[in-house]
Amino acid sequence: MNNTQNRTEISHLMLLLVIFTILGAVIGLGIGSGISFLSSMGVFSYWKPLGAASIVDQKILYANSNAVWVETAQGDIYVRQLNCPILNTDCKAWKIEEDRNRFRYVEKPPEGNEGCAVHVSIRPNAPPDNSIQCVYASRVNTLNDGFTYFALTGDHEIWYWRTPNSAQKPTIIIFSVLTGLFISFFFSKDFTTRRKGQYKQALSNLVSLFTSMVLFAIAGSIVGLVAGIGIVYFQETGAFTSWQLLDSPTRFTRIVDTTHASIWAQSIDEKLYVWNSYCPWEKCNAWVETKAVPDDAHSAPNEGISKGDTCRFESGDVVEGNVKPKNQPGNVVECVLVRAGMYESSWTVYYALLDDGTIWYWNHTENLFNFIYIPLISILVGIILGAIAGVVGFIVRKKNKRMSISTSS
Image (cartoon, rainbow, N blue to C red; front, side):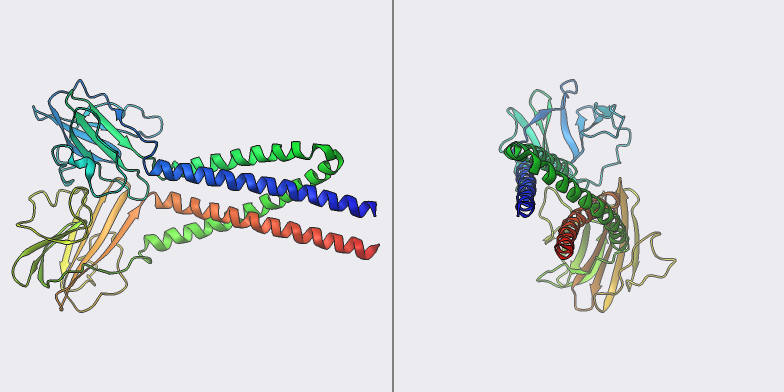
């Protein structure tokens, strides 16, 4: 009877340890997720100076989420980056931009402070004091960059406001979970000190439980890594990309011009319309009437274009290295393939005009970060599922052991 009671008390203490540990992890996860969410919404963001007072009579010329370019009255262009590669801190200083045409394809920001009131919901409450120009910086990588704004003040100072990027959010959550685990474990230890003998046995069982969880988590991480590599492979081959209709009340007769982010088409009433899929300062994802194709529309780096009356291009006509859609959206009368690249990203875009006057597009983005984050997320999921499997396996083993002891006695 005493042995049975002792085993019961040990099980209760062990359950208490597990409950406190899980509770600490859940509380830490909740707090970390809350902090991550609030930080991503800009709650903890504030304006910071970039120290451009030595550059006078400037205006913001270009901006993306990691850098800003200013042009002086003399025509000189300076660039300042926010993040630097590892062991390279020299980029966090204003430097002369040697290639004036390097970022010409980026739309020029508006004058005044209306750039701080763009259509995105995450933005600062107000520009800094004495601000004369404020712009929303286009995002270099939509999945990984935070929201960034740059402001120019009357005393020639450049300020920036930025939310954390996605790479920082897991760090906040993991730190919160580990903190919750640490606090809850020692709190449960103090709570059960009065039953030291049972506590030691319960702790021994808990160590066995964690060992099982770790072994299964390692196996899960390996499976997750393999799955992540597979997802990246299929994603990079365009398996998850499909044709989308660029819906319009009017019908089109021909494609006038294209880039990886814009298409100009002539309607049946001979008007020119443009559809922008990337436009930080204008209306996106809708047909807008326009007068002409901009002169600098094709200054994006490494841009290549192929045209034809079908989207099944011959090998000699296709831009080198493109990813191909498996099918066509309908009866194609005109098709344009555009491929462009910048930094860690490249785009393969097909525009197809059908015989019914509609225009469809197939947009595939290849990103270097996919090779990093997708396997990491898959590994994390594998670790979680493996840890759960370890808990289940431990419970099953304990149950079988008790049944065998009961049978032998």
